[in-house]
Image (cartoon, rainbow, N blue to C red):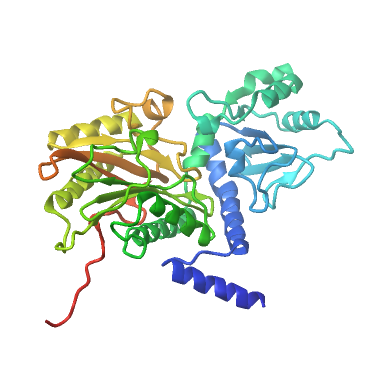
Length: 448
């Protein structure tokens, strides 16, 4: 019976998307295998590069550190009671210990190192483990500039420091660089999965922006948004933000949801001649996508989108090219932003760039390349000082403003695609939009 149900689920997934979407049990297996690989192969390298030989992550149930949430096994949806993880890297022996000062093993990767019957006080047991290893540096997750690396709450910090002998206080350092590198760095296997994840995202957008979902003159933007949300649920996936769909047309003032979330009109009826834009992302196998694409609703007499929209999309692609060519290892987000904007403006384009890290979180940790309201550069550390590292993923998010004489107004060509920066440079994870989606799709008729 189980085999029949699994076959049915796989067939449903294939029909629903070009990529197979795994049932929950298979997802858990993949998640745990990837997590073991990250702990055993990636973490030691990151600890060496950031010069931290002991990393302590502390969380309480339902108030989890964002880093700890990425370390839990597939069957743990939350921490349990107070969960303390201790990672110790002995570079001379080339070993890494993964211990939990908790009542339970944390999955198969992190073994419990606390017997409450022998030592009732959890903090004292943690101090014993520290003393036995005598680390050079003890990294804790506090950070002014990287929110995802600032997950240690005040209560746990105060308790820890109160129990830690004074001789170790000078060894306490911020683990922000280690935490960010852990969050931002992708393994080879994760990138294989990422391609599938973005492909699913593209498939859903393509279906949403088609006559299957949209009937011009009847369907509203809000209905398309909820269709996308429901599609994700029906596929057994999740979305990390509510989808948005908006319209630009000749008869309305420019209102971009990008610049005023509260000002975007709801329930706009989609009409022939509209330029549609969506912002959409999904979560699957602990990775996230973030994608913006465009579609044009054909008028009855049209077979193609107007040239000014086709050329506008080309301008948007050109801004993408300026940005991705300037993504060079070691450059900060602000350096990349300044060079990319300068090059685009010199080419006669009116760009705005607001590209962010993507991965374990939708708005993830790493190199931020502008924000929509900070085109002069981002003041906090992730844009000003944090360098571009290899094996990282970004939402290549930007727009260009074009003047449309036919509509007597300016419009924005807003695009967003997942891109990977590796040792050999930049590539798109699953391609990018270079042609407008058309509603309805133009059918080719054979014969006269």
